[in-house]
Image (tube, rainbow, N blue to C red; front, side):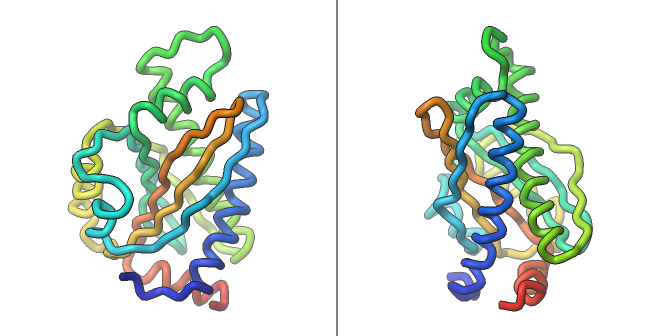
Length: 197
């Protein structure tokens, strides 16, 4: 069970909604088609709870990792099952373009880049802090293996994970994806203190 209060989660949800609105606008401009995005789930939970409540550890996913550098260091992980990956890739690619594996990977990385930077920009503007993101990296593996490898690679990271469920609506279709933020120790507390909750 996480140690944060409903008011703190609401504050995060407000920032995420602002970032999601910016992301939807950017994606719509890129593909020249209307895209709506909602954020129905914002939750902070322990590392071990992910597999029980969000996604099983043996689920194969397309996963994009992006490191955050600055006053709120951590790693963003954008993860989606293969079916959603194919649908989102089709949304991102121009009509008539064959969906090769390379183009699929490229389009998912671009979408993750837009999402992460939209959220970082919303936080940066609200709190007047400088946050930068690394070049996104994509891997295809079991969800549990990806999460474990991130924690082993950077063992100073907190065992609390911020989960953002994004729902994309494009041409009447709904596509689900999850964005995770694995923070360095104390980053979430610093964020709440800066917001004033």
